[in-house]
Amino acid sequence: MNDSHRGKGQPNPEPVKPPKVAPMGEGQSVKTAPEKGPLAISAEQVMPRSSRRSLAVVSQNWPKTSEPLRKALVLGVGLSGLASAKLLSRLGFEVIASDRKLASQLGAEALEMDAIGVNLIAEETAFSLLGAGYGAPDLVVPSPGIPRDHALLSLAREKEIEIAGEMELAARHVPIPILAVTGSNGKSTVTALTGHVLERSQIPCFVGGNIGLPLSVLALDYLNDNLGDRRYAVIEVSSFQLETVSRFMAKAATFLNLSPDHLDRHGDMKGYFEAKCRIFNLQGPNETAVLNLDDPYVRDLAPNSRRFCFSRQTRPKYGAYYYGGEIIVVDGDLVLAKRPWSDFRLIGDHNVDNVMAATGLAMAAGVSPVLALAAATSYSPSDHRLQPVGEYGGIRFVDDSKGTNVGAVASAIQSFSSPIVLILGGRDKDLDFSYLAPYVREKVKHLVLMGECREKILKSLGGEAPHTVVWDMAEAVSAAIKAAKPGDVVLLSPACASFDLFENYKRRGEVFAQEVKKSFGLEPPSASRESPGGADQSAPGVTLDDSLGNGGKGGKNGHH
Image (cartoon, rainbow, N blue to C red):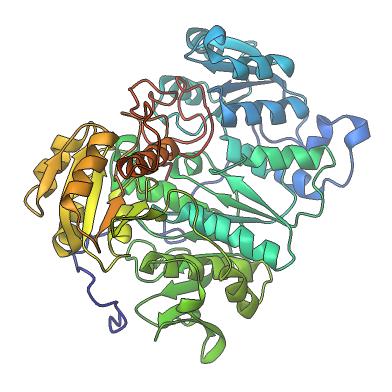
């Protein structure tokens, strides 16, 4: 690959060889579910007559069977589980939900389940229900954070009970095309940016999935005649959600990049990679795959799809590339559009990739490349992703609390030319922090290591830069200010989940900003230190209601 356009000053770490997994379409295609089974049913069979209308899209995904579905078991009571239960109830199921927590501990979630007629049972009762012969559920819907090897799911497979996640279930009742986004880093930005471009191009759309509202909310809107004029669904998709897809298909999908993450869940990079690849499930020449040519893991995927490729190093046959300070969209020898990077509000090389990926998705939805690039210029970065906190004492403070893996932190480091004081640490996700060594060596003047994982990070990176080891955010900010000088950047980009000290990554970023302002006399003193035991402590690096033990307070916390 031509490397002549690589940005100056970027470290060039030893490349990691991709796992030996055949790309989709090359002997590694995901098997689709058989036409028989509990999910094989037309929605017409379970909808009240008053709501029956044109169901062509739904019916083609739910083949008819002689008997309607009767019972479904939802595992995990939270945002995703509640959305699944509402959709299943609307479709005529008897819905049972299970969670490790007792109903009295679930609070609002239990009340909402009760309001729609869902019977809440303990996890032990769920085992008995799945093991029963007559009366066992026809379908199990796990929340995203419940691993495939969970004992309840293993029992369901043993009993040949179909398993479908919330996204898979919802996609079968969404009548508009889906634009899907996955990758280790940049998913939320590309999802929100694509939705922004479509809306600015007068194409109403739904934006959600692993961020914001679950896809089931859109499916319910459709079944309740509330779809409105929305023409596309733009959804962020995590590897956890992709584990349970079978007939999910996106009109356009992107796998942005791959770096180590969630190895505590998937076991190794191979398992993580294979889960991500399922986003191209069932795609053919009429569907678009948006691929990063600079990432050796993803650049050769989806050979059966229409491939829109993007790069900062080489010009693709069809796609977008960055050269001479401009994003250029091409089709063969024809230049379709170009726009100077200085026109955009985003910063960092990784955001050049994000804009090019969003352009490819928007073009698949019928937006012209000229209009797509123009619309993208008005997009502002999302909260807690390289979000400026302010400049105090000549020092810039930047909140990248959403940087929950080493790849995200590497991208964040490369976004600045000034010396960096980097705050790392939190709850470990079984990552190899030595991945960051060349980036720290190149640009970081001082490391501040905090949280549960501080000693592990110290062993991997302690020799790369001067360092201070602390426990909480107040101590981290204080140490960072002492190490910084005017002109430096203090960057919170933890490479870890937040659950050792905080409820979620958002709260971590908020406390960082509070402590910075307090240090300069701009914030009144308050008890900003968090103690372990927040709402999401049971499942590190999760989103929605990711485990049976998580009450599912919603929001996105590093699902990748």
